[in-house]
Amino acid sequence: MGYYLGGSPQGQQDPQMPSAFFDGIELGVEATMFTILGIAIPAGAQVGLSATLGYATHYTDGLVMHPKAFSLFGFFFASFLAFLAIALALFAFSAIPTLFYNGVLVALMLRVLGRRREHVKRVSIILGCVLGLSVGILLGSVGFLVTGLRPALETYTTLFHWPEIMTIDGIALLWLTLLPIVTAAAGARSGRKLGFQLEALTMQWFW
Image 1 (tube, one colour):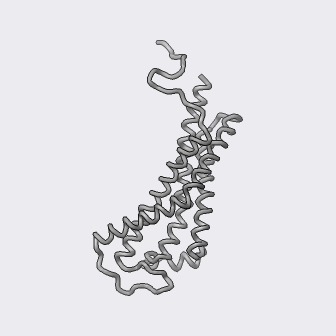
Image 2 (image 1 turned 180 degrees about the horizontal axis):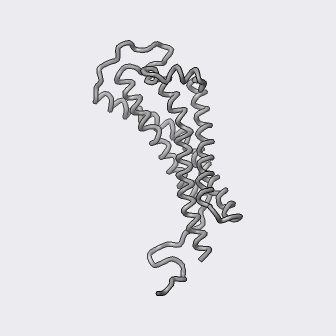
Image 3 (image 1 turned 135 degrees about the vertical axis):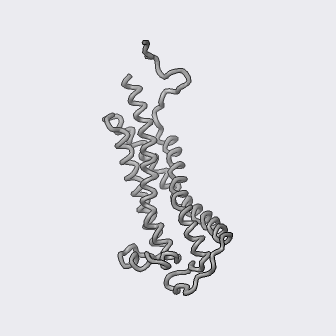
């Protein structure tokens, strides 16, 4: 049996050294889309249901005693409009920070790769998760300041009930709380993809 010693097999490209700028942009765009879809789709559906049932008011304005009749068309229409609004807001506030931390992720992992080559994928996933979580906490904090909500135990125990969770304040509290988790998952996904690329690169160097 023969062995192939001259680079990659025919039809396959050798793994390239990642670029903090270009690969950071690519990973950042994917992470931004992951975050937007992970938040905007379920949050838009919740807003659509809230608007259809008539709960889309601030908690301090009082709750609707008798909800409206459910309308499937109204639900999908309101959900679509809410999805667009939330997606645009998330893109405006999260795109640049997400691109930035993905560029930082690539730059840091290149430094790590220069010092050690063991468990590089695991380190990349953990670092991406930490960076994504940090950006999510920052964005969530800005969201809490804008909405005037306090992420305190009293606020959660008040709004995390039906139908309070369907008010504007309840919806904002829920998804601002979940935002760091989604951005952490997006960061871990970026780290995993980058880790595979770096592992392939180290294998190429080894052989």
